[in-house]
Image (cartoon, rainbow, N blue to C red; front, side):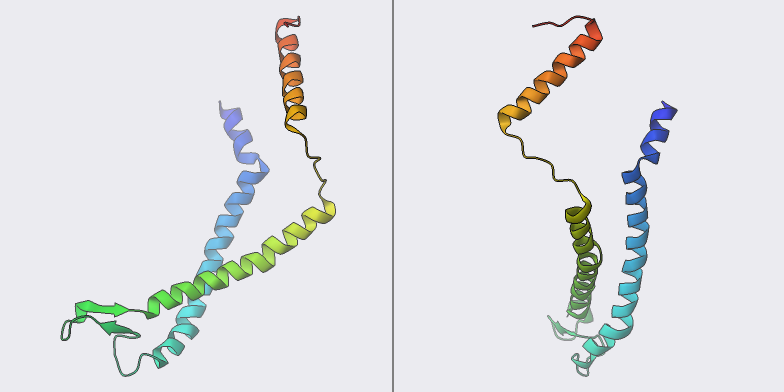
Length: 134
């Protein structure tokens, strides 16, 4: 049981996923700092004299009814920056590398695929029972 767990942990895709989560978290922190330090002050220019920031008041004289638009714009900018960086830094190079170095799997017809499955199942029965059942 422990050997299977060890094999699971040491598989390449589990380690890659763990690294991706850690790097992604660090990258989100960088983008958030960028938008907090640079984008939010720029958005504050459009907020006018309102001390609460960019948004609008639903009910006059009730600060709790202020709808903040600035954080929504900031979150959208965060998303666009992260998506653009992931696309241009990871997806495009990975796709090009896969096209260049990857092997193109031949497309099998449905009947060819079923024949391969049948043959694999037949080999498994032969190995398990010592004889072939038809």
